[in-house]
Image 1 (cartoon, helix red, strand yellow):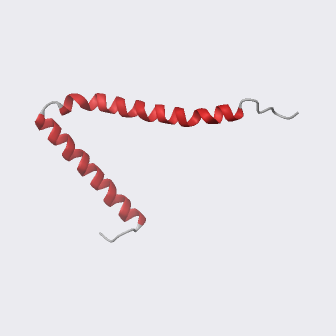
Image 2: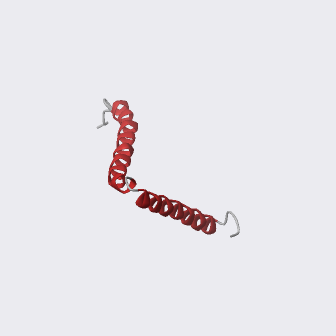
Image 3: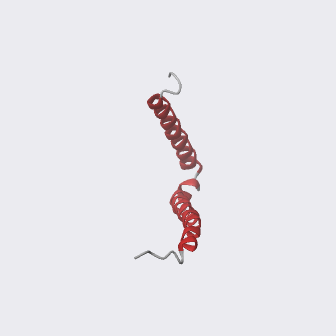
Length: 71
């Protein structure tokens, strides 16, 4: 009638390890994909400019959507 929680805390303790492993996997996959682009200075500069422009665009968009600061 009642469910047993024999391994409840053991299962809960696995979630942070899974989360960290997943984030590291995404980071290494992304870095492995970008590594050839960083070998040449021209593509490295273009990639850095693209990333900064993308983050700036995202920041301005979120600020406008949330009404944090007038643009």
